[in-house]
Length: 508
Image (tube, rainbow, N blue to C red; front, side, top):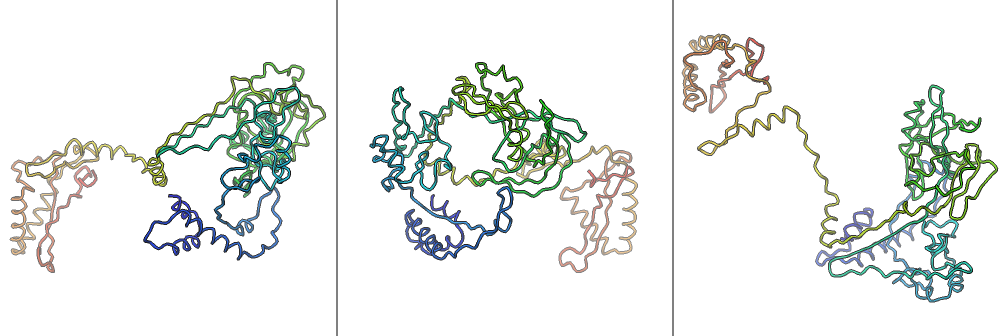
């Protein structure tokens, strides 16, 4: 299973190397697959040429098309090792050597090996740590193994690493429970945005000092009805996620509390964010003396309409900051009003409990793996005519005594719209009769064919024809086929001949 997945991800050259290594007499092993891929990677590393000096990237951290085309892909199979004892059977935070040390010695060991004190990883400092996890005891950016209790407080027991999930027989069970009692409030403000007619509409803006461009949502852009300009811009964010921007628009933003106004260019995107995730209880917060808030509903979950980037963030800052209290955010004075931002302890009723329990049989996992590329056929939708045809077939189909199925022909319209057809059929028959009298041999074959047609039950004589009723009398004529070796005469029935109402059976 793993070999099939890996070989579906690698390039053609690596896949060719793997196929050459097979003897097709025994089943290949995973270790053999890893060995082939590792050897090929080592060959590629040794054959790699020194990279040329890369051209300067475009403003906003976006690479040019030529840079993207020059980017290379690599595939490597590695085994994670402990950064303390270099063993491969456990991770760094489960290392017995580190856990058995005293707190001060533990911290010295981390510094001696030049590890990040937050994730215990190598190659970066805590300021650049990509991990979002924090200490379980104080939520500060250091690992729980390195937590130092504050003076006078009872030392909380260190959270010991949990054992790896155990595989029993052919079933695996995983249980994970996470509860969070704190949240981070982002800086938001209600501002006035100028629309096409020159009037102002209120929008909720997120202040982001790390964004190199400004954004506005598609919904707000529709309400403002501002003229757009085409733009081909690729936005890259954390994790190398990419967003393609196709349009941008320019407009003015204005403060609700003073005359501050800015002309900004906004990239149009489908969605920015919701903030916060759920309503936060602020009844115990002392906000009465700061009535000129930039966003009076900062504690309620609302859609973000705009994102103001770095070029705007520092222009709107003003002198003034108030700390609301322990485990509460801060108030920062801006030209848009007082903004509320920072980490706070949420009310217990707003806590989120995340738990998941999965119990899956291995055969079910295998079945799901091979069905992952299965595409469900689209639902068949029938037109009214097709639906009527299906119902007509169900009602009229029957089996004869000889076992043959018989079903009536459906009509788009009612047969009553047919007009009179007897006269035109009679005229054509008399014309055919005069033609056959001039060629007796053809007439004999015609009589023979019609007699056979009647004997087979395909037609029957009508003694009293209904001249003005919707009975359809089909005109016909004969066609000679001198080169035919079987049937030299063919009778053609003209069912497309129109009646006095300009209708025929072929139009039904």
